[in-house]
Length: 340
Image 1 (cartoon, rainbow, N blue to C red):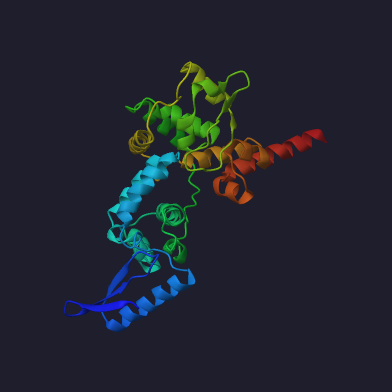
Image 2 (cartoon, rainbow, N blue to C red):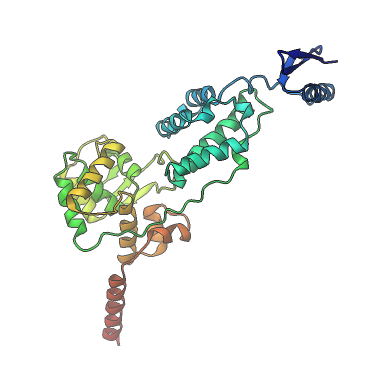
């Protein structure tokens, strides 16, 4: 039988001592709750269903985040990005809770706080994904078998980040001029490579000289991007890209010798100098994809260059300009007339 004893003036403690099991104790506001808990634990011990919850109920999420970074995240390519996410979570009140006591309502509250802070839905989803993996790892590998994953119980914020921003009028010339004036000498080459290859900034930064085959006009990308996005292993290099690379050619090393953040900040400043509004580096991927269609490449060929796996994904990035569609129609009409 469990021992029920009064603690202080208002609390009751249940203590369970069973041979073959570590001593269990828990404090409650009422004797009734203490007795109910004791009966539940003793029944689980009798049936073999009991699992020790002391570790999960005495370890904070903050401590678990540190362990996750040191034991799990460190083996991922996206480790640096996960460090930043973990630091954000660690600063919120939820990090001070014992991991075994975190419920779906706590995760929902964290989600809502981040939404009210104005964070993008994609950012919040990535943070929740990290938390979800942490809970699953703790249950499977850290001896917290009774731990539930509360992240699976809450709604994720819906991502709606589709854009159709393209370069218009003389924006490209103004942008490249501002890039040439940048203190970051790698900004202009990075922008041109993004426009010519349709790759994300992370992929552009992964490009290396030793992986270029100038004879075949191909650059090989043996490593996938750190966030596991779809990406081609071989990227064709069109004349403008070849001309750029030939001018700055080196035997080995990264083509763009700049950090991601430095490139991001330099691009923002270049847009400001050029008087270009609402343009992000990732919009260059939209521009490049649309241009590939305007060069009369078919959908399979465009997907081979950009790495898109489905038509729906490709449609998000492809926004042909109306005037170019008209020109293409007129040109094809003229060809048909000449062939008659």
